[in-house]
Amino acid sequence: MSVLECIDAGYQAGSKTLLSGVTARLSPGRFCAILGPNGAGKSTLLSLLSGQRRPTRGAVRLDEQPIDRHANAALALRRAVMPQESSVAFDFNAQEVVALGRLPHRAAPEANEGEIVADAMALTGVSALGQRILNTLSGGEKARVHLARALAQLWNPRPDGSSRWLLLDEPTAALDVAHQHSSMALVRRWAAQGVGVVAVLHDLNLALRYADEVIVLGQGRAMVQGPTAQVLQPALVSEVWRTPCELVCGRDGAPQYLFGT
Image (tube, rainbow, N blue to C red; front, side, top):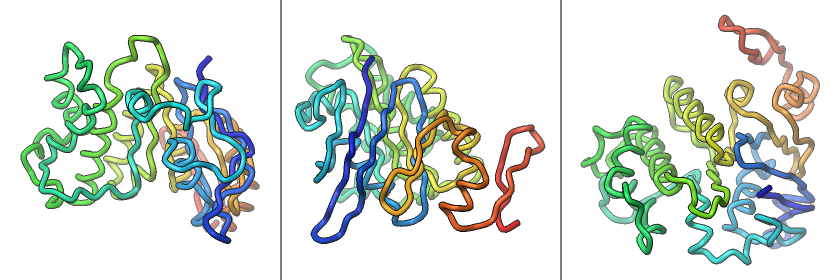
């Protein structure tokens, strides 16, 4: 089965080690959250998994091949990235930004190409923003536009059956509570349809509710990877985030953390 994996992967910038010796194996059809305190290396790990950075130690592989051996054009057909900050230099409107997600497919457009951008915008609730200049939107609106762009890029399964990967760096950071939950529920549905979803998150309660598994980083190294409910136990959370916490059941029966208890 197709997997995305890192093997003893690390990254060093000058004399500073940003990530050290991380081994993780990710499967399509699963939602994996990368968690850890500030400076733990979460965004660095995501950039290695996406192929945007080369590891200075170890390896990152897709389909058992080093990810940098996949041609950029071929990789763009299978892997979409939503970075933490996505500035646009020109006055593109929101619809044009979402349409950028279809550029990798221009050599072999889909039969429903004309509908994909509109459908992706409807999924993230930004249809009404289509003609607005991106740089005039709020942070949360921009985030939902960029999520629509990433979804448009991966819209249809690959004809050859190869896996698709959605890599998100803090996708909920600028969103209000309602949009945090709607966005996480949306990407979870995409995972259920066979897409591999990997997201850097800060909110442990969102991870508990939506992620199938987690990778917890601490001090630039992977402390543990596994099913969310098994990994996110109070003892580990208190150790990694250095704050007291209590795991309780919410009104809907879903587990959630109370901090500072």
